[in-house]
Length: 634
Image (cartoon, rainbow, N blue to C red):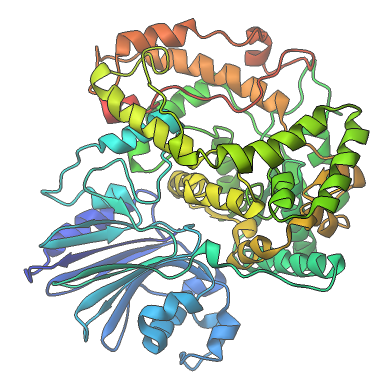
């Protein structure tokens, strides 16, 4: 989570050192462990250091070697392999920071160096000999890279608060990004920011900038992942387990305590158990957090949302905690946070988690995010995939099992929908999907003049996120292409800076992603049990009932969050001091928000922290209908 930034005056004018320092100071709102700048003529680089790995305490950035200078935010995982191929300082690897590996990799492979790096990274290298900047972002996009470019100037960094301090750069809000946000309740884009003048470098891309050229290049594509061919089911499971352990252990390289999410589901629980067992070997203990409120009066502590994580924690000797959240907490975050700099207006339970992690002196949270979409994919497109690949015998057996388990013909109707209507009808009409006209009923609070852009965005993402896809591979690619996975990563990266915490995502390890896309379709579901391959590799980590009967729904947490969010939203909207804005009709917004009813839930019980399992349950996370950081837009 270190910070970096740079200025390259493409017109040859000398960089004003005062401006570099101003931008660096604005980026250091989280009080870095150390910070420094390097400048020479028309180029300047800055860095704010977060110590996390043991080796990071031996680093000093920007790092200059010969005619090249590096600034970065990175964790390199294949250090031992790289050490055999590149020239490094003559000292122990335990005293060599990741910056030395990146710089040496660039010296050897030049523009191709990202292909040889494994881990989470974003960096920029000034090459004095070539008179150009070489910039790169990791395969998944865990680390951020923002930039502004014009004929005379190139600004870059991983923190928009610092970059926007540069004088004479417009801070005009990007209308397309606002429309995207209104439609999706988050900014789903690998290139857009909320600022018209700043863009993101997409994941797995490099950018070369000189005074005469700008060259962006994709160095890795998910769709190029090769098919995996192993002798049997046991071999597929063994390989995935090996990759999972490697991914978790690589992200535990820290000089500080390790913490983890622990929901009681498959993803976070598997990661937490592996981490806990590894720490136990060193006599250390894992600290883990479940997003649900501690059971209160009227709650059933044996209900799986509370009981599963507690059971795992007791078995593995994990220091287990629930979190506390009130509508006042949410309202405070709505007022204080600003999405234009990259934060999110969802996942409110993560704020108290970060606060608790900070108090524990940890700088790492292990998260299972990204599993559902890739490594632990549920198998929604499984039947369509079998159908499209002509595996009719296996398809018949699976449908037969479903009908036997479900007792009826409803599974057969599902088979017809997934295997016939999607690939043969809907997909043929894919490019002819009728457009949806957005009106006052769809977005009643949006200004009429802005509705055209919202309508355009609504139709664009309706096509991008059409589900289910005709194959498992295409379904995974849809999640990837619409920036669903990257959106949360980017927002958590921004939100966690004030607490000096880095999120690590083992299930988004490049090796796991490539492997899972190459696994044959039949291993994702067996005997009507989804996530079958992953369940098999964690059956020695988790209790049997969690491995084979686990459900991903979290009704009590979602129910509570729905009520708390609504209560907070009503307070925020009532305090707005604007009559209208370019995007939102504030008076209409006030009416709409106050007309929302909490789905017949007992609001008093929820706000007191108690709830009854018999109450109606919302089917998904509450969707906030407005850009919650309203001052940013109006």
